[in-house]
Amino acid sequence: MDNKPTELPLVLLLFGGTGDLAKRKLYPSLFNLFKKGYLQKHFAVIGTARHPLDDEKFQEVVRQSIAKNGTEGQVKEFAAHFRYSSHDVTDLKDYGKLKNMLAKLDKEFDAGGNRIFYMSVAPRFFGQIAQAIKSEGLMSDTGYNRLMVEKPFGTSYKTAEELQNQLESGFSDDQIFRIDHYLGKEMVQNIPAVRFGNPILDATWNKNYIKNVQVTLAEQLGVEERAGYYNTAGALLDMIQNHAFQIVGWLAMEKPSSFSDTDIRAAKNTVFSKLKMYDEREVVANFVRGQYGRGREVWQKSYTEEPNVPADSKNDTYVAGRLQFENDRWTGVPFYIRTGKRLAAKQTRVDIVYKKSSFDFGKFNQDKLSEPVLSILIDPVGGINFSLNGKNVTTEFETRSDLLKWSISDQDKVKTPDPYERMLHDAMNGDGSNFADWNGVSISWKFVDQIAKVWAEDKAPLEIYESATMGSVASDRLLAETGDRWIYRG
Ligand SMILES: NC(=O)C1=CN([C@@H]2O[C@H](COP(=O)(O)OP(=O)(O)OC[C@H]3O[C@@H](n4cnc5c(N)ncnc54)[C@H](OP(=O)(O)O)[C@@H]3O)[C@@H](O)[C@H]2O)C=CC1
Ligand SMILES: O=C1O[C@H](COP(=O)(O)O)[C@@H](O)[C@H](O)[C@H]1O
Image (cartoon, rainbow, N blue to C red; front, top):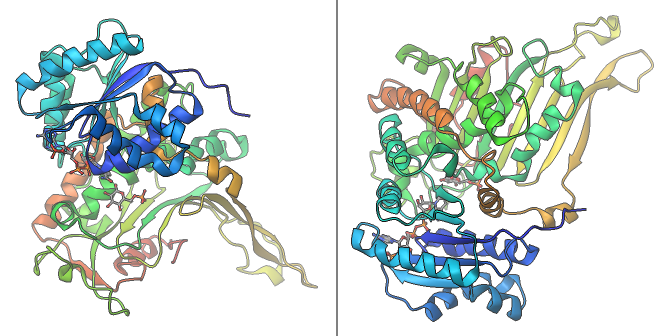
């Protein structure tokens, strides 16, 4: 049974209140928190954007984005908590109006001086907004002040550090909530439960028992309408620097001394500081890149045939690589990560490949033992698979590999909150466990910068892979070099 909800009073100031993210994700997520009782009477949301709107028109935008998710009465009652202020984030004088609105709504809704500032605008504005919130006195003296920052957090270590410095000029690190929606996914949050909740797994989560770890973030979709952004980012910046690294953080971390956000982040930081950084030669040896070519279906165009992609683009739509941690737990265990667009299937998963037993079952069982594999399936269907060795039904004794399977039930699926609902809820509770920590973010940027540099100088091949396959074959070779193979093959 779920715990009884505690009301979480606050005023949320949303920069980018008419944007795509707000309408598709943030309003439905806030509405769910309202229906569950975490938001009740004592909350207000101020939406801002440059476009002139009055409160009634803005409330209509909100109502439309949630209309399908509740009764007319619920929708109306929820939307009545929303106000609008036309505001240009680059114009300091506009912030005075927001300051007054915050104070007024805080009083009107008895919100306890709690404030969340959510930046759902283009990333180039993040630093400027954070500084203005501080300099123009938008923070409250009586409750909490928290800043939620959308992705991407910089485009290189240098720009991320500049942004961090700008945020830090107004907010301390425990007030900054860097969003990575993969950390809000149900089955990503299941990783620590499975790992630390089962002594049998906890005790064997190391180089003595694990042969390699695989993280796959495969997408079926192509670049869609986002070439303008994606052609400057590529799979490396779009998926590896953030989502893949954050998942690796949960898998590779030391056991935290408690399950508090501070201890969790500290345990992840300890392992991130042991990540082997690659020089140019090591980048080429440990990472491969690819770009999707045409597929067998007519509609499966090559990446360079997509709208707004330059015909000579060398952008990576596929990346695979090997991470290595130099510590007692992991030395010698490769962490393979891969992501790509226009692959054979949507599949987000982790495969933990255990070492094979060396027990001798006799002459009828030569080479019949397999490497046990624990698979944590994240999307599209959450679940856990464990492939184990057992006895085959044969006259002479021999073993075979059998699969234990669990999938999230339909009942649990319905109850599973969207990552944005979870992240908003966690930020309201001041729980930073499932947000990216600056230390980890800075290390992943330094690591990824090295790869980006080698690729920008064209010092590594770019393989064109056929759409609707599992991407670059060079990545199969990468694993084969160390006697490994991808567990998920599409
Ligand atoms: N959409 C998505 O699925 C995802 C988005 N994100 C991130 O979320 C953020 C928002 O993305 P998204 O909603 O798609 O963007 P949109 O372009 O749809 O919305 C941008 C919003 O910002 C407002 N805006 C733009 N310029 C200014 C300005 N100078 N002053 C005040 N407001 C301004 C716009 O309104 P107006 O033009 O009227 O000012 C609009 O409300 C980005 O950082 C993006 O990277 C992250 C993951 C997924
Ligand atoms: O952040 C991003 O993630 C999506 C994939 O997210 P998912 O939750 O559907 O797995 C990706 O398509 C997009 O390019 C990237 O910016």
